Length: 113
Length: 115
Image (cartoon, rainbow over all chains, first blue to last red; front, side, top):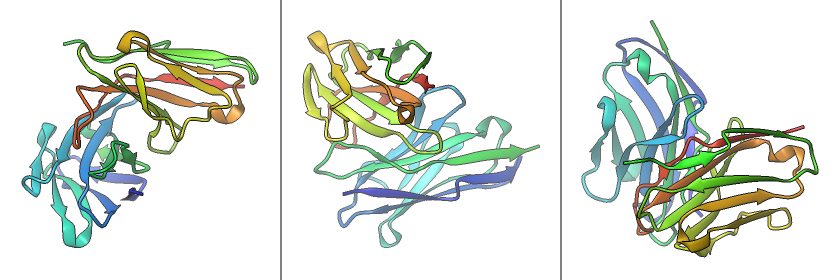
């Protein structure tokens, strides 16, 4: 079964600083990987996804993530944090043989002015 | 394009009462999902429909939870009777189909508090 681990339940960065949110998956077969963002009292919105094409995936709002098979990681980055990036971020995955999306526990990002 | 609609947005009930949530997916989306998101955790899939058939309900507590998707469009999720541990946000999502890597689009969720 697929599992997803997000390191750090809460990350704080200064406005303009680099954002790095970590995600590791467990799978012997490269899965399909997703990053979603959730603003307070809203549903999840897709930021980007990896589906075995380019390993560097660009998403919305200036975010990108790199799939590293050797490290079983799919970390999310953004060069310069903006106040509007404050939200909770979820990494998710499913394997080729399963449609069930498994989510990590989420990382809450705070942006300090 | 309208997104996934859910109602009600908030519900407070006492334990042992029943409750129902409604979801209207994006037009044309064949696959519909219900997730439970407990505070501090990621969403957990409860049930997945493909048109009006159940694809996966392995994590649905069938002794108290039920769901249906009549005519392959709207869906309802019911809890009867509710327990304290059912307090959570219930998210509905939909996708065009269910191939690998398909994007799921989420509604705003229904926040349930069981007292």
